[in-house]
Image 1: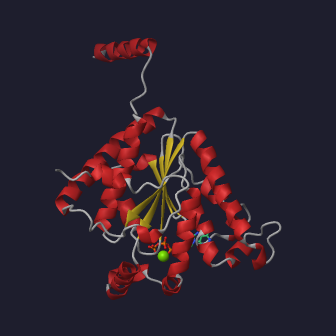
Image 2 (image 1 turned 90 degrees about the vertical axis):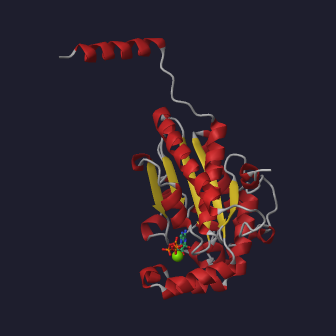
Image 3 (image 1 turned 120 degrees about the vertical axis):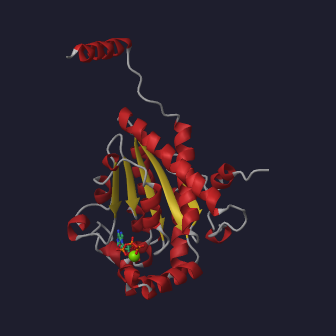
Length: 298
Ligand code: ATP
Ligand code: MG
């Protein structure tokens, strides 16, 4: 029987209220047989379909799509953006990478910089890191929260479980509002193993063309690997919803990550059953009139 790729990627979607334990999710795809050539076909097919969908999305000017990418360092976010989005019309795509917030950003609530980076109607927006950093890196380094200048949060003691619960709720509310107003949200966690991260870091050190990608800070964060995994588990458990689901995608093989993400985006878009906007009878008559005018031109 032919390998059922659709059923395989469907399992990567996290149903609301699932208690996620990352150890139970694979970082590779060794449980299936998928050759690189079949993978390449799926990817190319996905990219073509995505381009066609983008065209319809743009024509409708009603919905927007937000793709959120979160992962440990070197998990391949950049490579997903480069390959999976390669078939898209740059005019309708907006990629934003979120780094350590600036002082101007810290003068607003943490959603602000993400809000202004959202895709317009008809556009596809990609967040390379996102508002989720505010329950990830800030959980590992709560001193970052103090620089957010929040009322009633004055010492590290104020940053307790209740604080995080509230923050997950705020994120869910934020995304629900967006979804209700026409933003389709898909969130991907690129699930990398600690061993594969080590390999990629060493490559970044050994290969002079990749040296710029490595920083000593990356090594420091790696020391907190288990804490990060726990923060990711809680984040996914608390914020995978009907209107903004998380997908946990194996990230130890970069090409497989791209194939899986292209497949998932394609699968979700098909459900929307997008068509080109229909024209009214009057508009059709006008179009025919315009055509006749053009044809009469000398
Ligand atoms: P690569 O995977 O290629 O290293 P990157 O996304 O890690 O790319 P960097 O410039 O290396 O890009 O890192 C951005 C840094 O900004 C990350 O360490 C991230 O945790 C941090 N960051 C992002 N958002 C926040 C935030 N809200 N508060 C504090 N730090 C943040
Ligand atoms: Mg980095």
